[in-house]
Length: 204
Image (cartoon, rainbow, N blue to C red; front, top):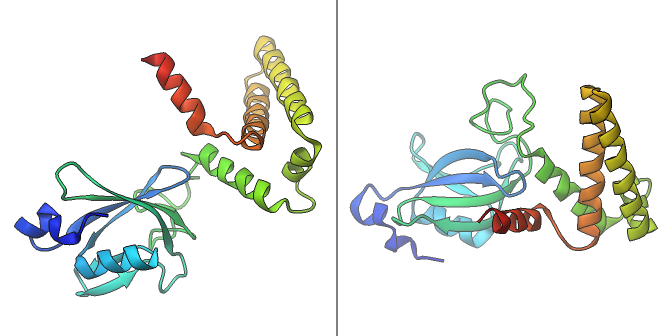
């Protein structure tokens, strides 16, 4: 990791570096904060995002009061070496208003953007823990043939609803298809990222 003293914002600015926090699973931008050298080093050492509060003039670890910590997955520096991008796993709502992100417009609106990636993370956790009573666990236990069969069934049902012109049922069945496809992919050690790479290669 680049030493804090090498950041251009430190050399030429006020000693603070802006840090963009991004959800590791959904890729949503969660918030923006500022780090001085002490906050940066604490973040790297302890693995929980810590900022320098400009209003209170002190360090604050996000979640130290609420328990909604941001667990660091990776830290990247932009090309000008004056901004950080931190991918983290949030333990709960990030904004003090109770929303998942500081950019949410309302507490009333469901934050569905990136949910498929979040669902993938849940399925991966099920694959690791195999909790009893979980339908996902049931599928994993049944094996690839059962999972592949379910993908085929849901694909056929999606096609039927599309042909019949029932848009509400189309979305319902297509959602079932995506879920079962994710389960199959996770069972084989793959993810949405692998599909993205394949599609990107084709697009190029």
